[in-house]
Length: 489
Ligand SMILES: Cc1cc2nc3c(=O)[nH]c(=O)nc-3n(C[C@H](O)[C@H](O)[C@H](O)COP(=O)(O)OP(=O)(O)OC[C@H]3O[C@@H](n4cnc5c(N)ncnc54)[C@H](O)[C@@H]3O)c2cc1C
Image 1 (cartoon, rainbow, N blue to C red):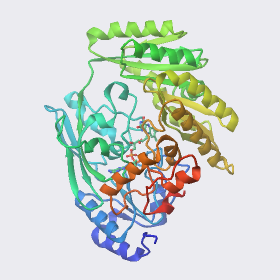
Image 2 (cartoon, protein in one colour; image 1 turned 90 degrees about the vertical axis):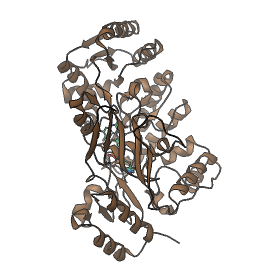
Image 3 (cartoon, rainbow, N blue to C red; image 1 turned 60 degrees about the horizontal axis):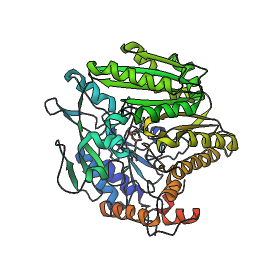
Image 4 (cartoon, rainbow, N blue to C red; image 1 turned 180 degrees about the horizontal axis):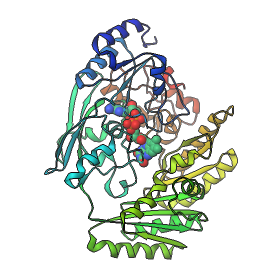
């Protein structure tokens, strides 16, 4: 039996009785902005969008959806790049954007309590008067929500030194599909019991709805130094990364961009990047003034020894911001090169950088689609941007197929199918490559335990036995999905 309710009218009436009118969207024009997230190649109009303002309203919506067997798709700011917040035509999109209050900042204990819809950057802005900030900084930080960051275990430029979301979140309040509100973790740095917090970070809205987050705040560094280095060979840039990390230096961030990305970013941001470089590195060092100049000199030595032909170093905030501007605007800049692009996200061991980049070049030639590479080099977290035109029949599928092959190269090189953007719907197939049937089955068991009715973001994150079986090459696993049709998109 298809458990998706056919009783739409009753569900809608129930929602209308429960929520104020301004918290419910049902008309076509109002629903349109919710038909996709940042993975714009995949779209579907939702049936209904609800925008609760309180946790109590979230509990009520969850109860109605559970009672009627309606899928619930949690959504923060919709900047996700793997289709995690992709709606369903019979489902309720549960937008958390109105729950956007910073509840408290505690400078003595360096923690902040915030609602899930608070924007990532808003936390650092609120903490700034206390000389504090929230470290994980996805490039989307001006827009993305902390609830979405927890659900995706978001990373960013500074995760090399300061860790991912999971390392900077101390506690969450979570609503399960059964209607239980759980307090997981707290304001302390260690908690007894199973590490449910780690489980929830990266659970992509499939295990619970995050209704409150307690984050750790860090003191702003005394001083920063930003270095731009240009290389004539991509392999030299890769070797420079290995050499700096191998020497025990952990920069705050170390980013690489290839020629196409540099050219797009330079035209867009006028950051002063060398247009003849095959690759550039942007390196940020931070810390106490007393040690920073010595570490900066060491890094410059490594860059010279690795063959950098241009090195610019900036101590002043204005030049530093200019050097970062190109990297931070690289995605929209690349977006000007072609009508559409898909941003892939895979992770590889650092020493495989040159090898995998060569394979990506070969795939680009075979598929006839250009690729710009912008990535967190020291984490081995690649972001190949595949350029295509969705108006050309079949080209979206072609680009998605190429993305799948790139991720398979990452797995073959000893890496993973995601670094920070999650699985969503985009990477379901490559999950079949990465995990065994038994491992996938365990994922389903955990989902079943926390979401027995199966209404929370179904069809995301974990591929079913049918899907992996159709792809071949793996044993059928026992995992099941209450809404099998949701895996088709
Ligand atoms: C230009 C650009 C740059 C980016 N750069 C980075 C980067 O550097 N690093 C990085 O990690 N990501 C990056 N991203 C991806 C994206 O911004 C992150 O994944 C972010 O964490 C998503 O947050 P969101 O609020 O937009 O979530 P959404 O896209 O709305 O949702 C993402 C997932 O979280 C779930 N979810 C959302 N809110 C909740 C909640 N309260 N409770 C439970 N589940 C929830 C959704 O169901 C979905 O599965 C980038 C995206 C863009 C467009």
